[in-house]
Length: 123
Image 1 (cartoon, rainbow, N blue to C red):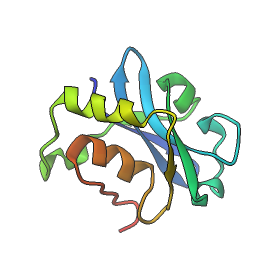
Image 2: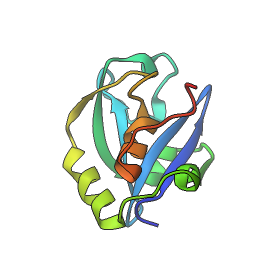
Image 3: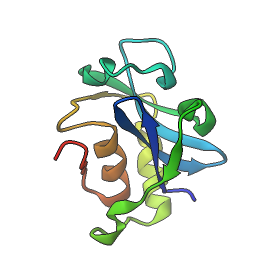
Image 4: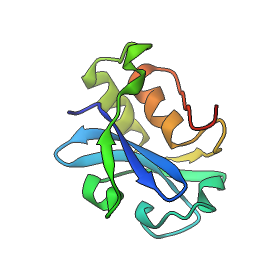
């Protein structure tokens, strides 16, 4: 459903995206490589700049496993779907600071959904 968080299994880490409908997600991708996010290597997750992109879910996922995972709904209240989508779309094609510990792809999508960036990958 629009507003859902999508968790994608990548070698060595989880990539996160926000589903916005019609088969599209909004997600953070490294700036320093022109390739689409499915070729993101584990070293590039440490880059300091990233770009927010709207891409087809099947392109972002490639041949990796993925699932809807709104796991923080237990402890946080999601924003209304329209607000989540509106905020997400404001970020498209903008460059953002990326830090694996404090500002990663999971922080980005949870900020959109809940108004607070959280990631338990880096607890």
